[in-house]
Amino acid sequence: MAFRQTSGTKIVFPAVVFALAVPMLVVCQAVGHASPMKAFTLPFIIALLCPIAASAAEETLFPALSGARDARELKVYSSLDRPLATPMITGFQKANPDIAIRYEEMLTGEIYDRIVHETDAGQKTADFAFSSAMDLQVKLANDGYAQVSEMPMKERWPTWANWRDAVYALTFEPAVFVYHKPSFETSPPPSTRAELVDYLESQGDAVHGRIGTYDIERSGVGFLFMSRDQEQFGDIWSVVKAMGAAGVKLYSTSEAILERVADGRFVLGYNIVGSYASNWASRHPNIGILLPKDYTVVMSRIGLVPQAAANADLGRLYLEFFMSKEGQTILARDVQIPAVSPDVAGANTETALQKILGGQLKPVPVSPGLMVYLDQVKRARLISHWNDVLRRQ
View 1 (cartoon, rainbow, N blue to C red):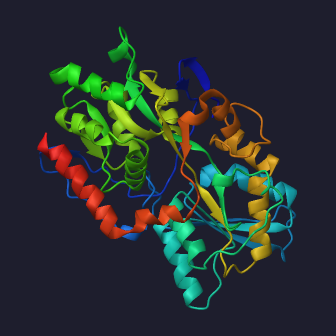
View 2: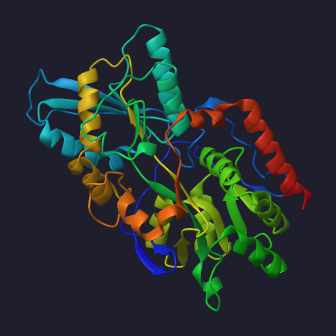
């Protein structure tokens, strides 16, 4: 994802497909009104970090390039769509032609549940797990379901992106504001949360019902971003209040919001995963993207080797490739998701973004703190307050 700075901290993203795992159902709720659709509710544990869905687990076998019948097999559980994962798999197999890969694409919660269930049953599980559910991946490690994997790159890996040498952040994906360009031909869009409040209050009826964001009750990534907002910005509830007064519409997927920004039904989308927004911006020129200047939350997808891996050495080999200069280059160049490695050159990297934005970027640390988002009491309290503030307007 090449980033180009156009003005201030406004960034233009090229195409990238963002594929996380969560229900592929748009659940819309207009503030102050009943949802027009019955909410699709997964068990709470299923997906605390994902706006896009994979369907049920889909398995694909990538035979060893050498053609060897007795090739060893690496099993991967992943929430990344298989087409997006293919460049990384191809690169790994070119370097390791005698290894076959069995790739199982599934929801983030299913990855967690499968590893826990199989391990507890005394069975072998995946050799490598790659998931956007940062909290669930850290919980696996915290509860003893992931093993230590000391990687050659660990000394150069960002400290926020590694916990106990067991879970590693492998991507760097900012949350952004998206806006309808024709609606801002005479004045710039808001670039901070304070400016967003001023904009919503000054525009009044002109923007009522034309703002979109995630439904934090049904979108895992929306819940994560709101939780981080609360930690980063002491006046975040003034933003929620202003959005409520503006008749904000809530959705469980990025696509639903971006579609409406693209055709002008919405003027703004708040806290949208940038790597998914950029795919829409590349195909819909009316979509603009900027990284908020006050702070920009950054999420990551996490890789680990399960404790009960059938072939832990193969899992570590795949993780090592994922973290290598070659693997991270493939991630940034071919998969079009920003790389974490400081050794990778180009605009689609953490290094490049840090040079442009510096302390504005707030990566979500890979740490036990993520498990706070799995506390159902705290989660219910935040969601209740969110709904109360929105509906009072």
